[in-house]
Amino acid sequence: MIKYYNRKNKSYEIEQVAGEKILGWTYSSPVGMKLLEAVIKKRMCSSLYGWYLDRKVSKKKVNPFIHKFNIDISSAEKSVMDFSSFNDFFYRKLKPSARQIDTNNHSLISCGDGKLFAHENIDLDSLVQVKGFTYSLRELIKDQQVAEKYSNGSCIILRLCPTDYHRFHFIDSGICEGTQKIKGAYYSVNPVALQKVQKLFCENKREWSIFHSDHFGDVLYVEVGATFVGSIIQTYTPQKRVNRGGEKGYFKFGGSTVILFFEPDKVQIDEDILKQTKLGYESCVLMGEQIGVKESLLSN
Image 1: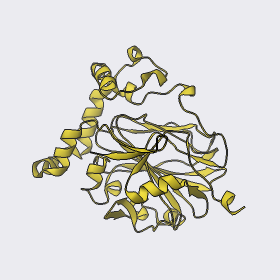
Image 2 (image 1 turned 30 degrees about the vertical axis):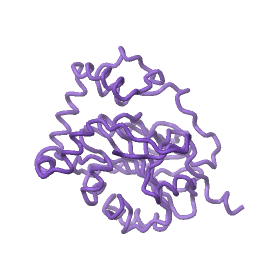
Image 3 (image 1 turned 90 degrees about the vertical axis):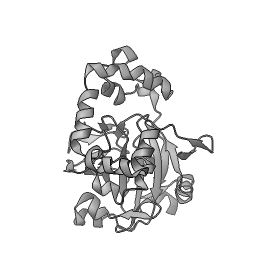
């Protein structure tokens, strides 16, 4: 059972988890863990399932998934009948009116829909995965020089579960460099898995890039793949200016994670998110909503 904080209602709710029983069995039983290490975490397993979800035959899974998880399909650009496969539904685009993007340039907005943890004054060698498990930014991106820029800065960890909208966006106007790709495994990023696999984000397939934002400094974007995520697709054009809220990319099927790192003294995360993080609860957010402000505003 995963409990998260609903910012709008100021209440705690229980997350609906796709494949909850098999996920729990895989990461809690000896047989499940052996199967995980031998087969499930391997690229071939995710690639084969991803291949199936790209096929027309997988379209039959769309309606049951929508009904089981009460997904608001009215916000999608396409109708249910127009999806060509399950993956086509999974990484669906939304109507422009589906998400309200905070237009204040000094508001830090969420880059996507999902559940959010946030940390300030980060220690590069002891980033929090979950209570008791940490990892290093140097290990995560395999670039010590870039990592050093974010010492004592802030980071946000946005977890996209399979029922979420799976495109991720730019938090500001600016220019993004090219993407660096790091091969890895395909563990789940569900909290159940994060409590079992040490340095999970450093084990999984991931991609990173530096976004030169107009208002928040150089932001390090890290996209982490997960079980059955066949691909991380980057849709932006490197070195070309982008607008606030513009699309950066999307994940194919599976739960996934986007981690953003900010340099010191650039942002102040909203207090309710920091409080819930300290209590051990993720906060539910939507793409475009304010999750913080530009740091300089607080000192004026």
